[in-house]
Length: 429
Image (cartoon, rainbow, N blue to C red; front, side, top):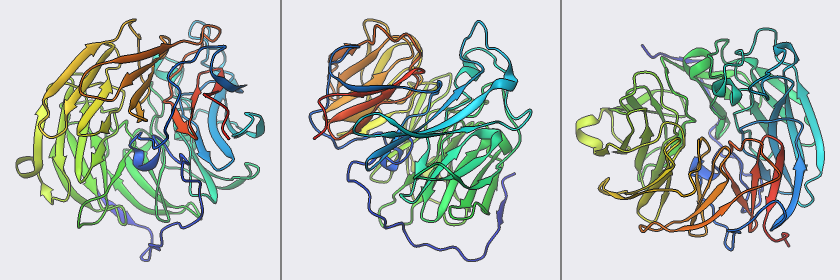
């Protein structure tokens, strides 16, 4: 049973008004968590020697994406344990790192190591834990940097030097898959989906780290919640749990509506997306896609569910573009395009060459969809209701896993592997 506990009675509702660059990418999947960029003239072809502005060796691996704030970008890594699948090493040597990089040159400005608390991590269990030690993408309000390291806690850091401002715990549990979800900001709240750590979603005061509200009973939600703008209504915090889509009031954590969701009894990985008040969810090992109209109250399965289609992806999240929903299946190498109004499958096309396993989110910008597979290179696909593969790009001298989504910024792409952070495209002016 879900419950909501209020830790404070008064909550500031003043929106952050600090100045940020128009193209800044401040959280997992960028503005609104929609993985939609506004940049034009983005690169379509690259290699180890072609169209690379700079590349920076990172202190360790990770599946988090970089965020960009003005002249700097921030990313997390892990080292010391679990990087080699055949020889994971000694768990006591595991370290996390937060790295600040100069956007123009790629030079590391500062890096801060984090030693996990004793017994705070799941043991290496193949591909699962292989992505769980540094999965959460950081976020920032332009004044502070927020990082989530699962059972080891949530950290608020100084943007200039990485010094710690506060630290908070949101739960002490873990699984063989490790942690997965990224923090998001709503006004003065830092919201953490701690489904793995405590079966809850927790809102912390972004300035102090103190708990403001807590939603219990959140199980099987391996996805980052999405803030949905409702026409003529209040914003809603939407998340997928096993078998249900749930919406909450982000100011106080109270449940607004629920809908029968992805029919997986264990977990849902892809984050939902939204467009003009319609929520789109995919996921489940049985592969399902669902559209629900936001703004309802109570059980809205009969009144607000618009369509359901037997297509989906177990891990990778979708994007919306020009009336269509796109995604790449995590293991089949199939690109899907669905009509966003009807749920009709417009096309499903298998990529060639086969990409292998694909866990990262796709991104859409400049009329193109960018998808980075773990070991099969990055694919550029036309964002149109007729399948067209524009390019397939491979770093032949970097065989490390790529499990993070590409980020568009100032006409370039930022893409990380377990070894390097790349800036792709012509040098920014």
